[in-house]
Image (cartoon, rainbow, N blue to C red; front, side, top):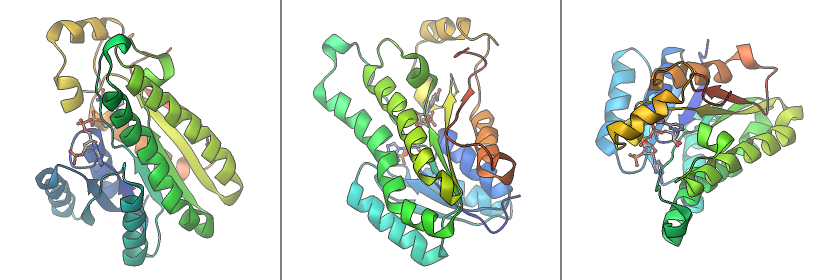
Length: 246
Ligand code: NAP
């Protein structure tokens, strides 16, 4: 399915990014496993892929650093000669009510979640244009679609990602590059582990399917958007959320 393709997944040492990296490798892609703080976990993602007969390579880069993303693109394009699939998954939360939210918490979330995706797209888009093919997948959130009290910074970054997705989709469409977003709902990872049981129960109550999702659910959607089955789909937001955003 993805044999001969080269994929980069940001924040792929753990959580949803790890599941996407493993899923794309299972489909035959060579995967660059980006990480920032979790080196051992990124190595473990690589090991898991290699043990299953796939090919992967770990690369440390803070996606919020424009110049570092430039180096990442240069290194990847020198090593593999191309990039077919770019998954902007790296993301953080710094939740708090707007009245009490610090400027630093706002900036950190916007810098990593939104500018991080701009940084990679900006540096890889010349290669995508030259190839006249490619898939860019941005991991947004149901919070970016609906908004969420206590997550003004996070929701702004994820809604911004949707705008970025639609604009870049329009820019690159005539060159055969598809740009889509996935908006996961409540997925069980370290990001959601921090929530209290009470808060979790309240969220689950708001999900029409009355259950949480798993990283693998998001990975399946990413595999679809990375493959040829979605070649006529661009600028869309695919909600993987048990019906939360209906
Ligand atoms: P997670 O387990 O907390 O993982 C976050 C990932 O982002 C880690 O791999 C981390 O890498 C990476 N990351 C953070 N800052 C980075 C930076 N500056 N540069 C590079 N990588 C960085 O979270 P998750 O649940 O898997 O979330 C993955 C994505 O899905 C995020 O964009 C999140 O907003 C989105 N999402 C999650 C949910 C959910 O319910 N879990 C719902 C909607 C959307 P290091 O550890 O190496 O720093």
